[in-house]
Length: 89
Image (cartoon, rainbow, N blue to C red; front, side, top):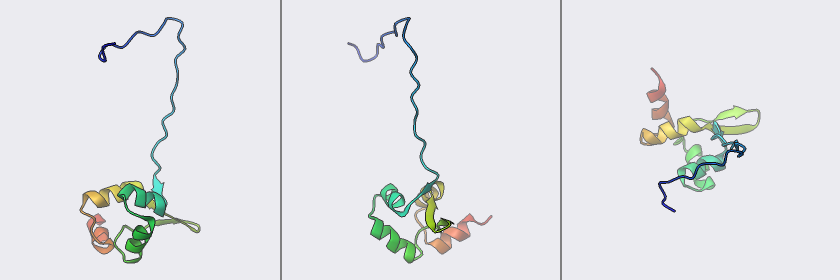
């Protein structure tokens, strides 16, 4: 079968709804490390040294904003202090 030709669905076909899981807005240390392709302990070491963006806290849970981690990497992964200064208008 030619890969550019898609066969038509039969007239009695029932449409199938596929749910796509959205990326989470906040990440655990493990998820943030996986996003950065580093180990969790390395990520936590960077956090302790003030080299990753400040996390948010939900009670005792600590999470990092996905969008902020992605923007931080796009900016060249500056230190937390420099990143905070860059974020102020």
